[in-house]
Image (cartoon, rainbow, N blue to C red; front, side):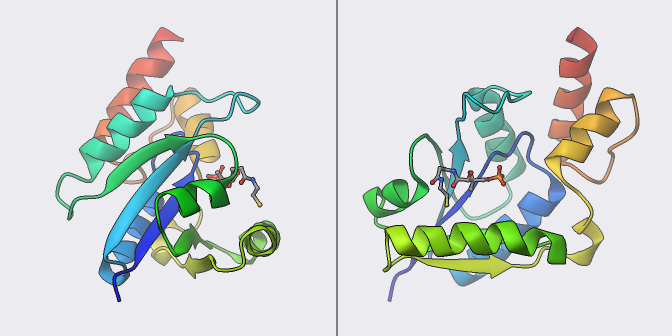
Length: 161
Ligand code: PNS
């Protein structure tokens, strides 16, 4: 059975935790679509195009993945692209409640779509895009926590801002 999965998120920006999850997903699924949410209510540091470029640059060494931008309901996208599963990462117990609610809401909306939770490597369990932006914003080092290209873009972006 050929299984296509969607890994959705804000990816503002992509972290090494996200990348680790992409690599793990590629070991399980035949095809992976990384779906970048464009959310006008949640002001992003990086534009949709920048977020896509960072994912593309950072996944050059991997089997090909598709990257799409979406708005609206995630389950509609998953159905449209013919995927069976949604991949989400759980870093710690604190992630669980929100993820559990989303998974069950998505199941209520579209029963045939399964959410699959993967654990990123424990070395990345404390990393979030929000903290990366905060630390980089105050001039702290995020080396080793995000791909090198993302580190550079953060420097450029925050210098300009
Ligand atoms: O990286 P994030 O910000 O934690 O990702 C959250 C995301 C994009 C997966 C979630 O906000 C989402 O699915 N948004 C699309 C709108 C939607 O379907 N909402 C209902 C989810 S139960």
